[in-house]
Length: 381
Ligand SMILES: [Zn+2]
Image 1 (cartoon, rainbow, N blue to C red):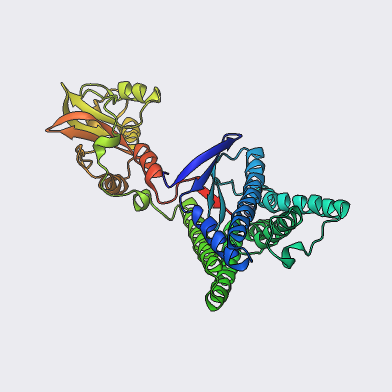
Image 2: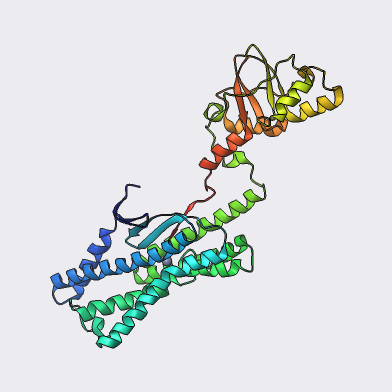
């Protein structure tokens, strides 16, 4: 990702700033510059408080990240965007307790900081009305801002608007009673409804950030809902591999050139012994490299039972199974495996055996190309 640059790294987590991040500083400089008596002081003030706000956002994200690391979930990076921070981590296992703790950890950082600052406010007698009396670069005003920002960050993130923290906590609580999929669908729909309300409110009041966040929530909720539904269908075996295997991949990308082969003069007993080595279940039959036919596991076992050990492997060949070429599309190869009910096919070129391709090899490739990998990264704000 070149749209952001790294400025530091903590516990293996890269902290990055998105290229659009300065926009919020420019916005703050103008906003506070216009509001203050002195435009320059106002602009500096705006930049300072927004930078401090993002320090708090970073600490919030680190709260999530450290909790995730505690459960062994890898955290790749934290990216600071104008609308907030994103911690990108591997998706956590469907474990409501872990999700609960990881989601609570972010807002908890802000709550703890707000409490500490509340104590300092009491001890040093800092007037909490300071931010409302005017924009000035005094300790009291800036300190009060940080205090309020912490409360704001905690409350805002705890809104039950999935995939925001509150929504994830809500989902985790639901998932303790319901299935993970149902819990996600309920939390996701609540999140989308709140996003629509938020977006409308932003639209009517000219709140551009609110609209952006609403959009983020709506698309994030929709995406996660689709993902859990997809994974549920996949788990139930309702989605054959070729649906999520992108077309355009060919046999030559994954086939194995080192296949154990049988000789047409081998006996079924010898073939059974080769099978017992456990390396392969299906065997091409060749003579001097020339492809003669294919023996499947079921074909071999049946022939052995029917004709006994001394008959030649010819008896076990399945003439219906045709070889594929290096240029055969993997989707097509899978379709043929389904039709012929085998897990492997011979690969030939001009009648000569090149090797074999297995269902496993195709599935392994599909896994790296499917729309949602088994453990996608999730972003949390
Ligand atoms: Zn958060």
